[in-house]
Length: 506
Image 1: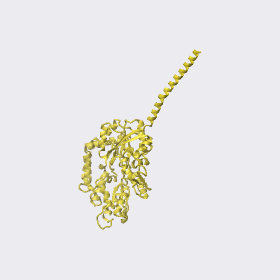
Image 2: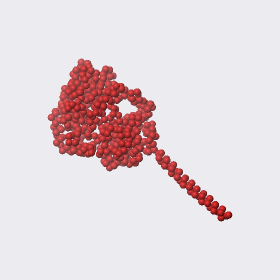
Image 3: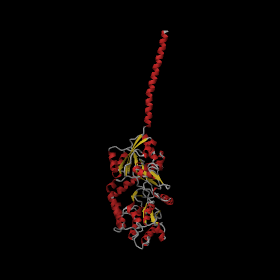
Image 4: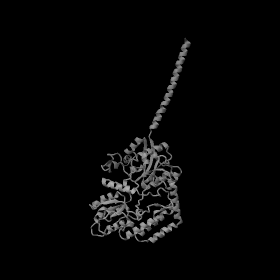
């Protein structure tokens, strides 16, 4: 009996020990599971470096908090003053202290180009397609910011078209019984009429056909020269100002200036003064953004209540075609540090995909609707006093995102009528059908240009201006261009740039 009791007690003891062992295993497992849950729920910290044009916003803004909560991240944005931004970037790069995301104005800057070649940043080419809002940016925008044929950054988008239009005093057109010019000959005739036929009715010869500031690339691009680079028949590139089309433009503007149809302060006029001359009724036309016709009209009406400015298509060049240069479609791009994991990279792209929508952009740029900003029936946005105090705004809080691509951004303005907005949009649609991308966009600056480019550029600008105002002749221009074409250094510059262009196209 004792032996049986002993056996029973032994069995109970073994069972108890085994249960204790199982219990201890469970106790060890539970903290592990709890820890993994806490780890999974911990927000992903994302650091961003960008510029600001004014006061630096706080990271405690409601817009940041909402994004943090939605994507389980902790956004830490550092804003650096725009005037010292390049120096700050170079210091961060030299110290290897770059944040997870950094805004770079030009990836072809030698310091960042070298870093990209050495693998400092993620190649986003295989990832962008998985983020529909980012993938919806125009193909040309991505192409313009590529580095060695790859997408290394998220472009901070801007519209491609709408910056080249002919804005005209519509009331002057109507008074003189004329119409917007369709050809360069009609353009010259209209400049003459606005200069000679007293369109303002004050019986004084005090008006000009056109106001423009200093040397404008638009003055050449409308003749088909481009305003940066032009592709050659051999598949290379040449600067727009060495083309035959540029020479045609120069002859046209030289004659218009000599005849007194262009404001005579052209060489010294600043861009901001173009608006002033229009508002003061000194000129009937200018080359400007599509929406500036409405914006300038609002101020013009304070001086002349019946005055109206309207945007029109550019006149056709002598070959019968209309020429517009696309802009690059971005102001810098956001590079992602290769030190972050692929998982974190995807989290970053999720956030930027969200802020590439109109709603996401408005949240970051303007804050919480009806608290930090209001929207009128026509879509105009007004920042509230509360929003201003928090430093919301396109020049501040929106500087860390790539933004919402609005093709019609230059068609719109606060307070514009639906009719004028629709007209402006149709004009931009017309322009976008024929506008041409800059073939030199995104190309590295040649080694020769770094050394001699500033001198060449100054000589070109000075001579162009002097030919227009009659201080130099067309023969002087020919000598200058032919001299460049015979210069071994200039030829090396063209060769390096053309080779980069060909390589990028592969």
